[in-house]
Image (cartoon, rainbow, N blue to C red; front, side, top):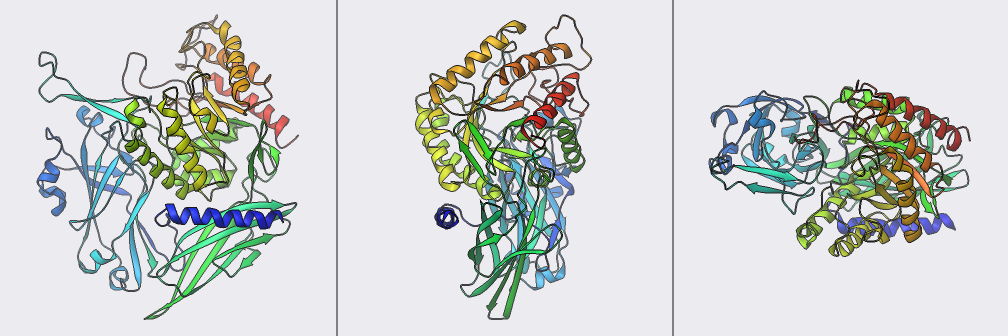
Length: 633
C-alpha cells in the first residue's frame, strides 16, 4: 500500500515537472545511438575593452573569424580567464569577452541531419552568454554554474563541407537582479578617477571568476529521442522500489524498455512502460561514506527507445546511474534509509591556482581523496551548483551533498522584487532538473546569508522554498542564515535550520573564552523558537600556514585549532544538532581587501591542498563520529 501511495505521489511530481520545465538536460553520454565530441582545449579569445563594452556587438564580431576583428590571444577552455595572463586589466575585467573555436565535424553528423540531431552544450559560463554558430545566433543564457544547450542541426546542414565556427560571448556583470547580485558603481570624482571608471561591487566573499568554466561539447541523438528521465526511490523492507518516467520527444508512437543492472551487469529488474516502477528484491541501498561497508552503491538504469518515422525505425539508448535511498526529516533527526544521519563535512569552493573555477580532473580527484582521508561524509556546494563531474563522484563515493543555488549576497531590498524572484525560480528549476536523480543530493539550499531579516524576505523565501518543494517533494529544503533568530523571516519555511557563526572571529575577535557561551545561546534560542533540527553550516577562523603562537593569536594554526575544539564541545551537547560543516575545506581567492591576505585563509588545507594542523584535529573527530554514528555503530 505504501509503495502504491508513493507511486501516485510520483505521478503528481511528474505532472509538476512536465508543467514547469521545458525539456530535459540529461548529461551527454556516449551510447550505441549517441556520439560525443568534446571541444576542450585552446580557443581564440578577445576582451571587449571599449568604454561601453559593446564594440563586439556594434561591429558584429560573431559574423567573421574573431582574429579578423582585432588582436586575439589563446585561452584554455574550461578555465576562468582572470589568472591566465599577466594582464592586470584582464584579471579584474568586467564586461563582455569573446571566445571562438573552429572545428571539423564528422561527415555523418552533417549528412544525417534528417534522422539525427546535433546538440551544442555548455556546462557553465559565467554569467550571461550569447552563442553563435557560423554567425547565426542559436541561444543565450543567464546565470553561471548550470548547463544550457540547443540544437544546431539546421545550421550544420546549410554549412556542409566547411569548418564549423562556434562563437561565445560571456559577460560577468552582476546587477541587483542577477543571482548572485552585485552593483556597478561609476566613480564620478575626476580628481581621483579617470573618465568612465567603474567597479563591480559584490556582497559575497569569493573572487568573481568568469569565463567558460566547464566543458563545451557537441553530441548527437536520433530525431526521436529520450529527452528526460526522472526517478524517485522508495523502500519496503529489503525491497527497493524505483518509480520512473521516461520522456520521449519526436513521436507519439514508440515503445520503451527499462532495464536495471547491478554493478556486475546482472539484470535486477525490468520494465516495458514509459511510466512505471521497478521492484528490486534484496536491493543494495545507496549509503553515505562511512555509514556502510559498501557506500555509494549505484545501479545502471538502461533505457531503450524504439520508434518509427517516415524513414523506418529509430532507436535511442541512454544509461542513467541510480542509487536506491530515501531521505526524511523526522523530529530532530535527518534520516537516510530510515537511519539517523549526522553531517560531518565541509564547505568547499570550485577554486584553484591559475584555472580559477575551471574544471580540473586532477584537482577533483585530489579533493575526493582528501575528503575520504578526512573522514568527511558530506559537503555543501557553497555557494553555487558544482560541476556535474564532481556530483558524479559524490554519487559514486557516497558523499552526501547539500545542493546550493547561486543565491549568495542577496542583501538589498531591490534584490527581493519580482524580477529577482522570477529569476530565482528559474534557477531552482534548472538546478532541480539537473540534479533531481542524484542519490548524493539529500537537500536543496536556496540561499546563503541573505538579508532574511527584511520584511520582504518572508514572502520571497516562502515562494522560493514552496516552489522548490513543488518541483521536488522528496527532498528537504533549507537556506543558510546568519540573521538574528528573532527576525529571520524565512526560517518558518525551511525543513532544517542552517546557521553560520564566527564567534571569536567576526564577533569578539580574539576572545576564545566566549565561544562556548555564545554558541550555546545561539543553538538554544534558534531551537526554542523553531523546534527544527539544526546544522552549523559554517564556522572557523583564518589561518596562515606556518604562523604559530602560544598562547594562541588570531591567524595562527593554534588559534584555528582552539576555535574548532570549542565549537566541537558544544556540538556534542546538542541532540538537535544534526551536522557540522567547517568553513572551509581549502583556502580560496577573494577580491582584494585589507581583511584578505591573498584570499580567504579559513581552509583546513591550503589552496594547494596541503594540510594545516587543524586538518588533523578534524580528521580525528570525524573518524570518531563515524565510529559513533555510522559504520561501526
